[in-house]
Length: 539
Image (cartoon, rainbow, N blue to C red; front, side):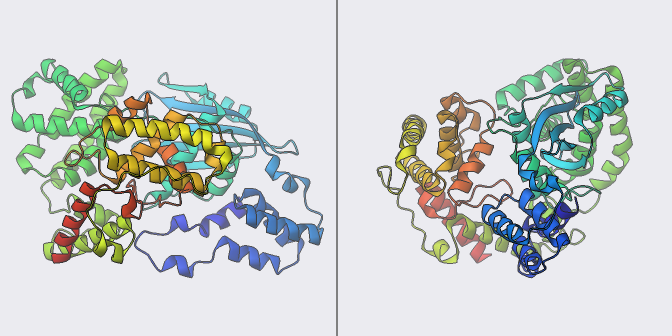
């Protein structure tokens, strides 16, 4: 834990997005290792052994091991066996209101010593690790205590596949590391390197979190059912109430566990004290009616889900508790929309972001231009980007190892068929280029067992996201329709992240896909970029 805490302090993922000078001033893990290598003592040898065990940098590990072999200090045997850790059990702890879940891992060191990891993944905050800790006890003993304390008929403990546990925790750590401000407790993210070390020893192949994407038709059916029920009939026929209802349905279907029939005290707090005041731009008289509508919606949704009456009462009590502050918020000056997001990220002063529209507009223009530069690959590319259509070109097999030609060809055929049936030649060229770059960048991705349809869906999803294909005002295609073409359900974002890393593409743009080159952008997307460039340059 000591070494894990030190490694977190040196992890660039902890830097604030707007503190650009910090990474240059902060020492790296390599710097720490270099210092330790210069001090030939048993204590530094012990620290180096742990760094080698926890790190996924093979070059760094080899460098440390060569030095430790030369020193020949007598270290505890378990230090030499860190790479032989054996996870043997994985468990999920869930609750019917689905604010989050605990993923529990039990493992055994080569010495026979036991350790247990508990990770709490919060769905309301974006499916992120909110807290985690490690104890030196067998997982069976930890679970026994959890069961004894779990006096709740709505909670459950279930064993899950180790590969599934790996996929869930790895994804939640990745998204959590992108969250700003970072989530911190007494033990998190201090134990993050230790948890990541253990997770890497689990098998690959899990699907991870697969939140359902709801169509407008499905949401309309739920809304109609609510308005026809005794809980919602009083709101039927009122356009303002329908606007609020659609907004609440949008929130509950797109955030948290993505379930429009799921409401909890925590989600009530988020929607009343943050989401509505920040996101919805409407007259105060309209917004003031949201708590009453929310009470009816909660009663209806809980009845449909079969939620116990006591949980419904707790959720309704949350509405009562937060309504006074909500009513005050919607009557107070506050940043909204993009200004609220920038204020939350520290780019603007939250107390003054709403007061100086000229200043904030200028700040927003600069931030938008930075985003456009990241999209096309820099200032020069932003000023020289062309709008001619991408050519119809063959797949480039150059420098792709022959042993992965077969799996790459399978993915290529599926991508080509998708573009021919759903998209066009430009998208096909972009997908071919992206696939070729990923295969050249990290051939190992295609040597591991993976479904070709899932990989092909991820390739087309990346290209679609980069070109705003799924935006209602642009391409307008729904992600679920693209994935349905491949027979894939759920999300392909984790596979997409693997491909992006293989190709050396950026993966840290807060959910955006920016490939850093116009080579992967269709002409319509490049025209849109030029329009935005000219608008924000003029601003």
